[in-house]
Amino acid sequence: MLRVALPNKGRLAEDVRELFGDAGLEVRARGERALVASLGGEFEAILVRAKDIPEFVADGAADVGVTGWDLVCESERELGMLLDLEFGGCRLVVAARDDSGIATIDDLRGAPRVATVFPHLAKAYFERIGKPVTIVPVSGATEIAPHLGIADIIVDLTSSGSTLRVHQLHEVATVLVSSARLICTVKPASAAIAKSTAELAEALSSVLRARDKRYVMANVPRESLEHARKVMPGVNGPTVIDILDGGMYVAVHAVVAQSAIYRTVADLKALGAQGILVTRIERLMP
Ligand code: AMP
Image (cartoon, rainbow, N blue to C red):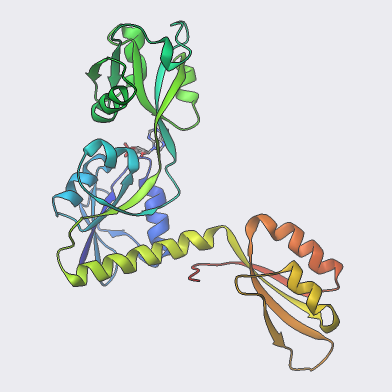
């Protein structure tokens, strides 16, 4: 049984459940506050805070986990990174008050006090760039620290920048770019756990790969087949299927990037295709 540590609430929880659900591993918890959930057959989820997940996995309480890359790096634990899950995107940034006169990192003078929930990452960043600072660890509401006079600047997460703007702060530098990741122990507990871990990573990545693709089916005039091949190149070229009536049309199927669907359908129409069908793909394994 593979133990998977997943965020119980917070920003990542919903996207994680959706991703696992799409991979056929629905998170079935007994109640809102359940600590353990079934993921079906071979998997069991433990539902904990995103911040604690690197520790749970590093200590072997779970074999794999999903959490933010920022939290993995801040934990300073030795962990394997299996997959970027492409949600929970954000950046850890240095920010200063709009009226501070600090526009770039080179404008920092003396040893400014830095309020942050990420003391390890902040310390490592300022050491790397050779700027002396005093770290002021806080457990939340970092944005108000410069206004309360307990810090000169902050190191905090941002995605749209709106929270910083509301607090009259602006970005000065990027410390880390983050997103949700699938992480694992460096040494799997057994060969069976290693195998299940690899299968889980493959299942999740097949869902991610399918998300921005569509499956297109169209009946194309036989004489336009060469043209259709250019319109729908697909993964390994389109699949061409004879239609039983033996008539002038053949069925052409291919995987197409979602961003190209509009053009593909218009081009298929233009070459006389009929019965055009565009569907979502649940999983894609090349
Ligand atoms: P939680 O504290 O459980 O809500 O999860 C916070 C995690 O969500 C962070 O560690 C990041 O990995 C991720 N995240 C994505 N966007 C943001 C954001 N704008 N602010 C804070 N966390 C974010």
